[in-house]
Length: 165
Image (cartoon, rainbow, N blue to C red; front, side):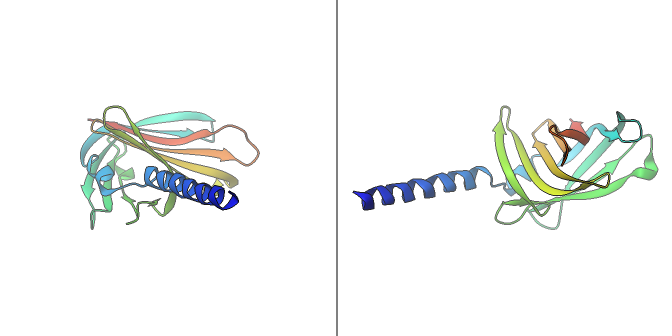
């Protein structure tokens, strides 16, 4: 009886871990839906005033070196000197995004995927837990950075790129 219970427990544990693994795995298909031109804004927390600041921003998302990478060409219509390039890169096993472990991958209505990753680091020279949230959809593309300082209970939105097409 103990042996049978142990076998059942082991099999259930493996099945549950496999389901969690599959749910938190991202694929190149998640990246393909954001290819193209997007218009929107960047909002960030200005720590000098403790108020959010929003400015127009646009992005062109292009295929990177391979199917596991896209390049972001970010432009700021009112501040062209701030234009920049960035990448979103996923690991071949789908467990990492920009070298950070994926904690959740959720499929939302309207073919939207929400991917979250968390890591420990610093923000404003303070130790914190940092969260990156990526929302990919046919008409919506968001990259958000949230911060939870070691001495705080709540998450703070550090910055958010929000695009539509």
